[in-house]
Amino acid sequence: MRDMKQIALIFTILFSVFTLNAKTWKIVGEVAATDTTLMVQDAADANVYKFVGKIKNKSFRLFDGTDYYIPVCGMSDPFGQAVGMEKQVDEVQAGFRVSYVNTNTIYKITLTDGTSPKLIVETAVPYKHIYLVGGPVNTNNPNWLLRDARELEKDPENPFVFYYRGFLKYNTFGDERGAIKFLTSNTSWDPGFHPAGSSNVPLSQASKMRLNGSDTKWEIPADGSGNGYYVIKLNTLEETISVEQFQQANVDFPNNIFITGDAMPCGWVNGEPMVMTPTNILEGKYSWTGNVVPGQFKFLKSRGTWGSCYVSTVIDQPVVYGTQYPVVYEADYISQGGNDFKFVITKADRCVFNIDLVSMKLIVTKEEENAIDDTESENGLKIFSEDKKIRITSTSGSKKQLEIFSVGGQKMHSGSFVYNASVALAKGYYIVKVTDNKDKLCEKVGVFK
Image (cartoon, rainbow, N blue to C red; front, side, top):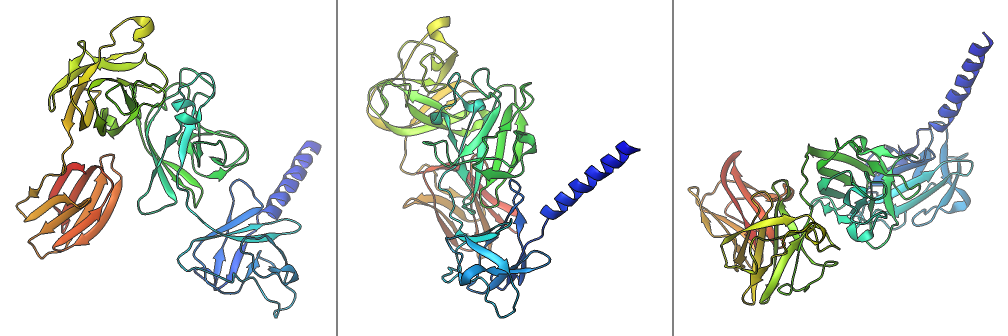
């Protein structure tokens, strides 16, 4: 019986502590979207509460469910500085107010609870870059290298959202072989995003993340069940992370492969070769466009090694534009034997290199000024590129929906038009889709130059 009483007492104490920490802080006033706005408790620190969004130049107070709080000592503007809070004892006492508010700017209001609660208002500035780093992408044994960090894609419509699209595989060597985290720079280990909490989290259960603090990671399992193609979404504003897509794969195509040789701008180097980017990573297709000179070249699977490479099946294979050539993979020709046969460029030009690791074929073409050919459809549509823009014209007066995607499936543009549309995009591969009342009128895949 005594043991039961002790357990009940412990439970009561724990429940009381939890109840004390479980406050509900609200912003009261017209500063935010509504007169009373709930603040969100931080997943990594129970004493921290946040609001993120647009605000107005209006007075506001904080409410913890029992008392209202106002700034101490008349320091009413918490923008860029932490201002202490105290309980309001008289209704005439002034609340907080941000003096200079840009209505198009997103702000972050952070309340730190405790014996001396404080409030600070800051602008929420989106990161320019986010990188994934960790054991699955490590090319060095044993330590992780910043040069292996892989940059995420920024969402074209939300500057706070980033996507990682690529393969992750439990590594066969190195430290923390299945662990990853995210960095805001590829030249420094800090600042970085980690799982909320104080321990590592399975990547399949990723939800909340935090900036800095304990160096915890997300993990894929050692048994290989987490090996495959991932689409991971990071919202750096809301500090959330989710696995949007996972496709298990026993054979993983590299996220990039590389070209090196005296025909290339980089020359014969294995540390910083030219990077081929995937045009369809699930099918092992990669492309690179650039200026070349007469000389040799081959492809590397990873930076920093000559041995793991994709080469020709014959010695010094001359490359003719538009002709397919077989490619063979040598896992480590230096120690295991095999060949190191090169391809050969015979004249200076600007070329497009496409390699397919499923069919193991290489094709090189001369870059054209306009790689999206003029396209006439039965619906009077014409799609072409001009003045560094994708242009669409129509003879029909009906309203049409235009969507442009990368070959990886990321939506790059969405809008409507009647007779013509014009979209400026960086050079690359795109899928242009036009619909009318949900019926597809035209779909064109090509390279926009």
